[in-house]
Length: 306
Length: 306
Image 1 (tube, rainbow over the protein chains, first blue to last red):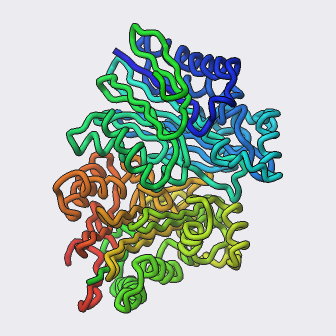
Image 2 (image 1 turned 90 degrees about the vertical axis):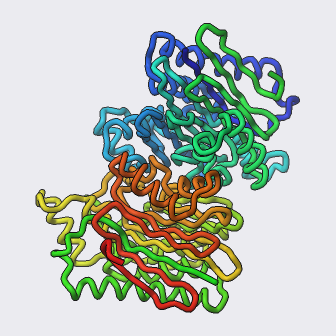
Image 3 (image 1 turned 30 degrees about the vertical axis):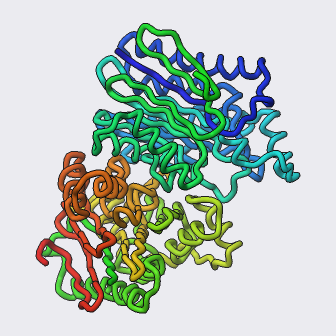
């Protein structure tokens, strides 16, 4: 038995704005990530390898707000955040404020596996990356025409756009259960469009956007990061599973439709437990998501319909 | 009814190294913080004001590893982290990687109250600070002879010192209950001695080193930050109070002597709930700590004895 779920962000994305070609492209991107991670799980690879690989595929896809295709800061740069966590030993790694790392999730994993630290920032993290054999890329590597136009429209004060609505659509993440019963979670993002002041969102915060504990579940979140930090969303879901009699699915629903709605926190989460139960819930109009279990076909969806 | 607890760090500090003069000085610093925060609570001020004030007093005291007297990074700079959280609305603010802010906890609070963000880093946070009317100070402001000598000894590879043992002793924090029943927590630190790569510890991570929720409690932690992040210590304590029948005291003990010991995470926490119960537990040799309740005398202690 194994299981894998991925997300490509959640938010307000009116169906009218998502034409059939674009919808197909997003779904294909999610399916690519499921396939890449699923292959690893199918040959008894680790959940850690699977979520790393699935997130790398999504980071490399310019449609999503992570890696290439990340949103821009107010001053026109890309600042990337990512985290990864392994449920068996509660090991974790996180990076934030990166400018030059092609696949932030891979650096988060290297921080976890090859440093005494959990969380590194910016130029310091990149110095560590160089010592670990990473290559740096120009910040322009991450740029796409579409993100640039979004920033321009925001700077002009286009009333149809807000930093939240643009950015929700895109943060990526994955959660997995491997055939040995191990759980892992990973999340990667360009953050909020037009962000300032070296803002750090929930994705790289262990316990907020990312958490994994074999006793409870693995969780990756996407949404209005500030609220997700305040609610400690990912850890809260795990704590409910551990300390109350509820299922992972119920814990996810209670947090997404209860705690988060009470704080007006738009977004969603994907989660998986050690029994392979997958929960994907969101209180926004849509969430790009997909899942795969042993012997099944990959399934992807965007809106509330299955 | 009100209550206030403060800590000035936890760790391995052999009694032999703490001569009576030095012990008196530490205790006086804790008592100063209790008095400053206690005065606010006694005149019906908010828990938020009380923890801010108590932490500012400890940041200004060069004995503690926060603000002036903070430890040094490997390359000889000071990088400061802080967070604050209010339990009634789950509002939070955090800053990390600061070089030029005299009282990081005050900037964390300003992030919470005057920005759309929760967490800001380094130069970006300092740009925000300038816009909010903060003055910057030179990085040398934070330097003390003693911290410099510690770094020099570490650089020379003195076997009697480790980054952990030095740094534990010093992170500061406060938790408070005000007469209106509101809880707040704040934590501030210079991090781990000889840290590299813009390492971020648990203090500014909402849910790890700092958390407050009026439904459960307010928590500030000090110890081996990486482990505290992985265990989501502060949120875990709150979750146990909320989701199980246990008291705050029991939740604190279960996390400090259970979860943290299992992960070899040395350190401790202070916590308070809405009934005014104060818990201060540590699995290290000592924890600089103090508490004050309405009508009582401030109490301070360092080792296991009361």
